[in-house]
Image 1 (cartoon, one colour):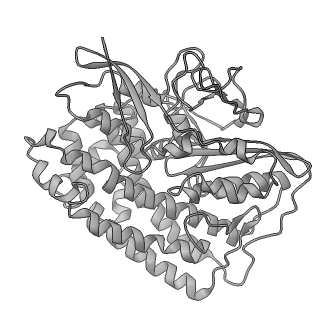
Image 2 (cartoon, rainbow, N blue to C red; image 1 turned 90 degrees about the vertical axis):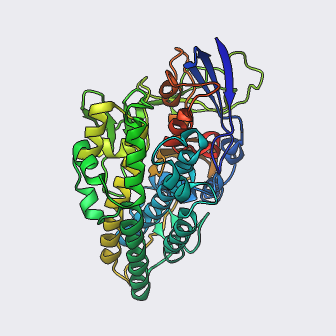
Image 3 (spheres, one colour; image 1 turned 90 degrees about the horizontal axis):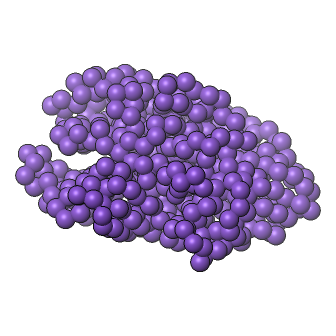
Length: 473
């Protein structure tokens, strides 16, 4: 038995290390280390409640559009303010814009470059894939960067700026949208739709979104032009639909009023979400030991020399269960037919996670077009919110990478406790006090590793699209 340490991984937020116990070229056990402690939960203690709106969205420059509505929702929960329809639509649009931009960036710039590696030079698809997706040099990068930049112009109209907008508040959005801006937003959405249909899918969004089974997916992709059909050819040649399975339990907080919340079980049942069942275990984190705590009662006290610890990440559990979150979880919980068929046949996999992001691109862009047309210029976008002197609030949203929760307690107008569970905290969880590994740690077991092994581990890790700075906050 030998130990291999791999890292950094991600092409933007690279502070991730994975220790692998390897025997005869196969992973026997994995331990995932989030090595960067940032301390935002401690920084917030004692500050005015409204400071959360400024501070927490700076956890990350990549997903501040998710870290903005979460504290706003937590403070709205504190004061029970009602958001006007325009404000709710604007919030959906802000979140969807960032989430879909992240899906696009992940596919083209983080995930696909691994297939251009020389490890695959003997595959018949390698030459065209390398020419299209090789990091920096591939022909896809210049095209997708322009499409992404134009799409993100939406956030100038919707939120004033990106990242770190202050437009999203407990009572809605302070960035009112006029009639002329509605027209310009729809024009930007048309441009993004055109890119997705011509370059990514090679088909209309509606046609792809209507696919209901793996058999339909494979028939659809056969011989079709487009970057995602190219991925399908590559993925099925490598049998990635059978790689990267964790525990097949899924969590979603629900998104945009479009995708339902819930907990999906391996038998196909979906339970209603009960936030009181969420708790965090610190046994294998460099944090002071204690019993698993619900986030509303959570603590973040450092113990850097703790025996048996190997990460700064806590271990979230739901009623003791280990759950995966992300686009695949959202679609499975929401009952999307293709996502459920992929999971029923093979479990959660590299291929299923990538397909789920494509499903969201194909289904959310048309929804965004409907939301923009539903905005009524001149009507309210935000209601005043008077925060109480004391109380607790919870803000639950769906980021690109999955379920994001903020829990805040205030006393005499000051933050007494602030706790966050990010999507990568769920997915890259360490072992808990019972020694049960988190989703990624499970998904890596059995993969080839060591000298001469293909980059399968990289495909599995990146299929979760980790955001490490959000993991430990």
